Image (cartoon, rainbow, N blue to C red):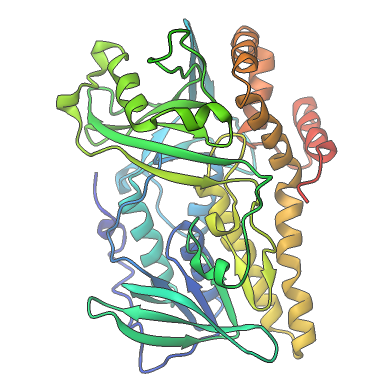
Length: 442
């Protein structure tokens, strides 16, 4: 599979990131999917955007590497070539496995989203998005490890950030009237601005590794719903699922996503569980210790808009920093990119206002946009997370769902949040209604 440089032949290299200036219209901290998307949409309007990334590309992130049609739409909106010739493996939908049942569900045909998902390694993916932001005019600075905010003591507003630059860790300061925190779940910037995680929101964890396998070109993302603890005599169901995503390059990404809020989750060694689970897969899959290409790595999944407020005092939270991972599925990239775009569009409107009061009023539209987009869906996801925390309900739901194709189709569309806006279709109407009547995420 070709690397991102093969898609960047017309983009050129990023401009000198500093250009003798330590200020910008907007600073974006973190060049993951949320930060790079925000930086691209800001820069293409002509704003001076400083995109700070603590690592150097390429760099690895723990992820399933599978992208749904929601994420593909965002990639297309960035002007990225998502063809297979450009290094993306397309997939048709999701294969669900539970017990002895297997069901394949194709992505729906909708006007709002493309009818396919894609797979790509995060090391390639994140660099591709960062370079795309740079090609739009964002000043990308790698190895800029942001330590904390610069704060106006009179107003309490953020006015920039401090960082240590390069291998020498040279102390630097950058200033801007607005800062976007896209620095992930740890989000030191948010914590320094007293934005704390809500403990009443679900948190998940994900662990994954890679295997060489003959199944590397599978056209379905595969999810195993009956995740069990092999060391438990009763083989109890666990609050999560396992996945197998073919990468198209001779390997597969194999992992598991679980809720770490459930009491049972704290009793399990998830890395060991993943190894044991892989050992129980069919022999023809080839997931043996000799086929492992990378060690098992894990990461936290901040869910359900679990850090508030998403805008205050000049700081906007996007992606994992704002807890935009879906509680229903653990999908994070699509919502990270969408939140980055919402933030960028809000900032563009705000900076066109003539007064401080007008700009601040416009910026309040960002958390409103997040609530309008995700309140109902994330509330339903939290209900699903509650079911996952009760193993007996998992087994009952899985047995009922996989035995009723019509019901399963509706649940699939609901969980992956793929509906047709303003549709007259009865299923779409029902899904929109469920989203509206679901409890608020406030």
